[in-house]
Image (cartoon, rainbow, N blue to C red):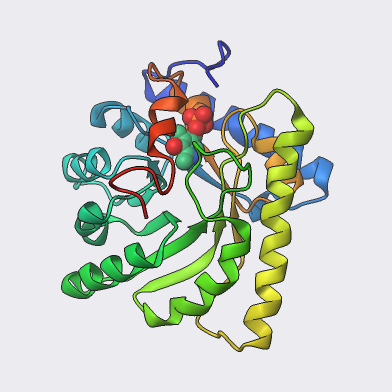
Amino acid sequence: MTDPHYQTAATTAQFANNLAAVRARIAVACARAGRDPGSVRLLPVSKTVPAERVRLAVAAGCTELGENKVQEAYEKSLALADLALRWVVIGHLQRNKAKFVARFASEFQALDSLKLAAVLQQKLSEENRTLDVLVQVNTSGEASKFGMEPGAAAAFIRAMPTYPRLRVRGLMTLAILDTDEARVRRCFQILRELREQLRNQIRIEALVEIQMDELSMGMSGDFEIAIEEGATIVRVGQAIFGPRALPDSYYWPEENKPGAGADAG
Ligand SMILES: *Cc1c(COP(=O)(O)O)cnc(C)c1O
């Protein structure tokens, strides 16, 4: 969703302005929902933004960065290695790139298969690291969105204690891209309801290693709705960095739907 209102930030002061504007929007949404703004983590998404411009955002106060593509993220993490940054990979991961995530990422929000969990566990062992993970769920029913079906999540988290270097923290979703707010909201509600079910399961089955607190949902165009529905993490790119040249379909291409591509699952 490219919005003409998004301002491209080219100075630290402009980044500070954009960040303040996003924080103000978060505060308004929290007030409407009767929530503490401190309960919502703002994850700035720097995909497509060159390292030198990311540096300005860091000077304006960003301490962690979300990136969709692991190769791009890894290169930026090397270019910005002099800064103490927390890198969060938020996009679909091919198994042959798991080694990069194991090397530099602190968090991975798009875990959607046990095969990928097994490879990550192996690579993390080699690096002697752990990784916070969110399980990505497809709440829109759209083939272009990655993530598992909501009904598959219970069995999935039951298997997760097998991979102790992956520390499960919660769930992530991308809402449907739709001008009908009710349909967007429904995606967020599905994720929250799923979290409540999984919390019950965790209690009953004593899956003590699994934490199910986080709901990563909402982007520049829809994060207020997500906050009203309980988001604990909002992933915001364009409202901080400015409009992107590439359309969203570049990140969620139809031909990469789960089960169809060589890299699926
Ligand atoms: C790019 C991206 C976002 C942020 O989208 P904006 O419209 O730039 O706020 C959020 N989540 C994921 C998975 C993304 O790839």
